[in-house]
Image (cartoon, rainbow, N blue to C red; front, side):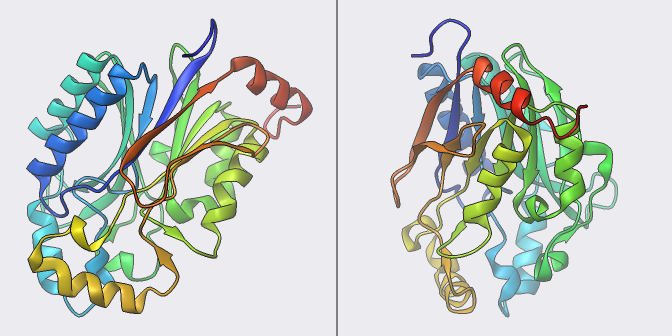
Length: 289
């Protein structure tokens, strides 16, 4: 339980119902309600958690996978986003969730989008991933800088980026210069060795802010039979990818203060202190004087 002035951060380490928008939305709403019971102020999900990261993009199943992805992508706003808003309002919890956003005009493109929802039950805003990486470009369109925004919440200023956007210097600097105090670092999965293990902690230390590092699970039992062979191909091609969890809460010094158990669905939480943010920014304020 957070003391006076403190607030609680949460990271959802869970698998969506891959490529099933309605079932994944059901599960997201249940996790949001669970976070509300835990008095979580901000709950974060991983990159395109709804309806799941398109792991088919590096396999020969790209054509049929892309069609399925379009069928289950999320329009903003829509009945899907309204359900998420209603759940956030019921739980009295702010939510940041990665969605595959469907282009509302063409219906032929998706974007890797972080959707920000307030506990009031309203959409605060969205951020489309600026530059999809490698073969992700066959699935997602490019975003723009309009979503590089820091949102003022009663407990802190919050922001978010997707995956390898944390390797891009200027988007992160923009959010730091806007004074972010809690940053959502949304990843699809982890890597046993690689930049993800460093970038979320580096962002927290550079920005003197808390970071919620969040991701999905992608175990064989997390996909239906029709996707088992595709998942097997993905695992063979994507050497070094750890699909059994990485969710953690990082403090403004870059230290990990809470971590979800590997391979288990859970909501990892930690209390956050505004005083720790002020102290860290007092030592180093990259966007100030």
